[in-house]
Image (tube, rainbow, N blue to C red; front, side, top):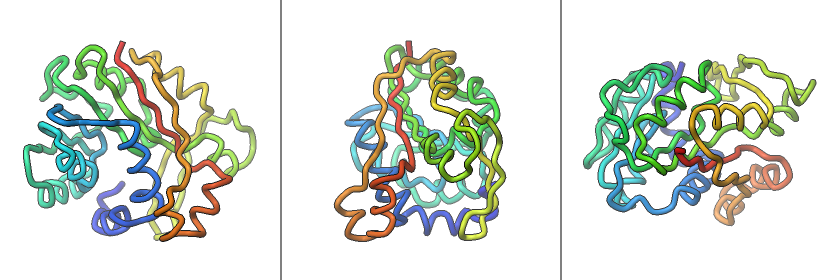
Length: 225
């Protein structure tokens, strides 16, 4: 679905409040050092994470995205030891060997997948023993506050975002998300609920005020069992 607005998304995510000053800082902080590591970038988009990870010393990057336009942008923009594959994350990563990667990131992607357990099990296969997967997603309380009804509702949401982007994602309670992680071969090492940074408060004070009292995203650090 991102093919239709890939260029607009790049411009938005590169310096936008929720991507550049809320999600990426939180995910990178939980991820920690990547110096010399083989990193799997899941839902790589236009390469913003890959770009930053290489700048932080990653040994090599393999990016994956279902959007042909996102992969094209990533290949054009990112310089260094990085390759980008276009494929559905729910399909086997047939180009990757068992235990090939040291760490993986999956930022703001998992809620778009229908078969999250299949995707997570395949990710676990290509990670070495004890490797980490860092996942960010919508905070379930945030979705509940926005959509109402029962917090325990599990449903696929069809929504038009403020820029006219038509998107689909899953809403579900925290318990189900955690159960999917453990059913896929991961242990939950850490749960992080980001707060607005000082830089975000300076650049986007209204968004920062809102996120100070309303959870937006949630970040998980998962260990391969």
